[in-house]
Amino acid sequence: MAPIGVFDSGVGGLSVLRHLRAQLPAEQFIYLADQGHVPYGSRSAQEIIQFSQGITHFFLQLKVKAIVIACNTASAAALSLLRDQFEVPFVGMEPAVKPAAGQTQSGKVGILATGGTFASERYARLTAKYAQGVSVWEDPCVGLVPEIEAGRLDSPAVHHILQRALAPMLAAGVDTVVLGCTHYPFVLPVVAGIVGTAVTIIDPAPAVARQTGVVLRQHNLLAEAEQPGSVRFLTTGAAEPYARQVEQLLGLADVVVETAVWEGDRLSVNSNR
Image (tube, rainbow, N blue to C red):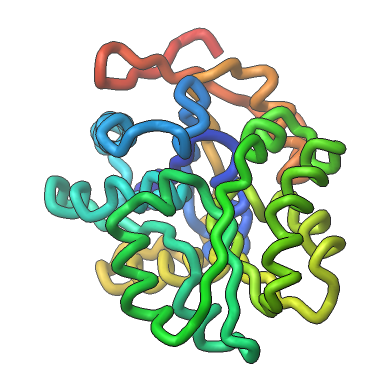
């Protein structure tokens, strides 16, 4: 009956949380948005590892039974290390290179992710293993995460960033595009409008939710089916704007958000709701 911890640098991981709630409706979730450090994509791997370790310690204080790293950048930088350091089960994100390479007909795949993800050893291993014989186009979509964090999902800036990223891919004959950052599914309608119906768009979030269920079953940690699920929302940023973001992105009403405060490399909950 313990909760599952879910974290991201901001609102992006909410795209994973919505699938987790749909597939695991009896589970209790604690979602932490580290908005005090957003975006992770432009930070060093060492910084991201430090943040991820601090969040893991925080979740363990809250007695979580599993942790979902709902952030491609944090997964790329810290997942392997966290698994070595902590006994709690982890589920991470990674760009869906394998399914994209498996289903492309043109042999050309586009990947939209952050610079941190593209620079990671984990991503390099992934492409080396699964993308042999496939041409991969990459774009970090600089500036897109801040637009999404601000709730501007259909702004001229969003259209400009995505048009600039996708136009060379389309010109090269890419027929599959991977959303390799959990923020990006929230602008999927814009992506779809640019690439058209002939291009397949892959969002890894549903697969991550399914994998979370597999991990819980493997460890005999699934909640009882009749138990109603819930979500506790926390942010290291400003609570009221974040509550409005959650309501906008998940279609919820009257969301209550608590503030978590960094004290050195550790987190604690601010008692002021």
